Amino acid sequence: MKAKLLLPLFFILTSAQGAELPDNAPYDLASMEVDVDKFIEMNVSRMKADGDFTAMEQVSRIGSGKLERGYRSAMKFCFDKYDQMTEENAEALSNCFIDQTAAEFGVTNEQFYVWLDELDRQDAANPDPIEALDMEMDKIHEAIFALQDKPELTQAEQEQLANFEQQLIELGEKQHKLQLEEAEAMAAEMEAIFKRK
View 1: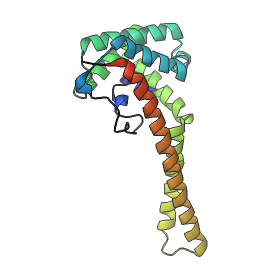
View 2: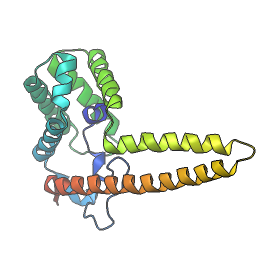
View 3: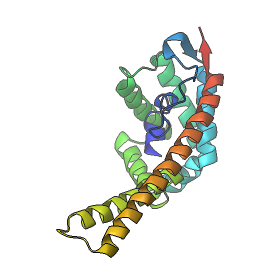
View 4: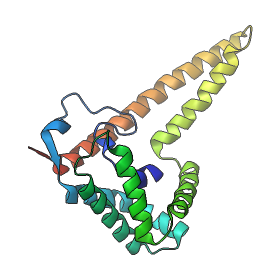
């Protein structure tokens, strides 16, 4: 949630939670310009689908309609101010977005961050499928490290270690597949937003 609110989604063009787009993806930023209205609409649609406005409403006690309008207005203001979305101006764009969104909601930046932190805590309790796989893989890594720290392994422990390693391979393949699916879906949406010059 916080990442979506801090800097909505320029970097998802090249990455969907770490997954690279397929090699033949026709997305060269230097040869494209952004349709800002479509870009904003895509972000708002994703936030609605993910329940982000509803979650923010529960935390902030501000109606989801006002939250949506504030979000749209802040994005429009910042994208008009910074007419190019580049890595170089990412921090300035992110700061602009925080400042403008907080102002739209009539709160301080500090209060807005308090809400975002609460949403982060809620998100951590309900991870998405890719995050859930990360957490599962982390637990398996810990179990592997615990076994590898032993000076000598029994036959049963060696079999357990091999089983953990196989589980990691299978989970890694599953995670990679999910990341590619997410990247491909994002690429399709971006095609409508980025126009060839």
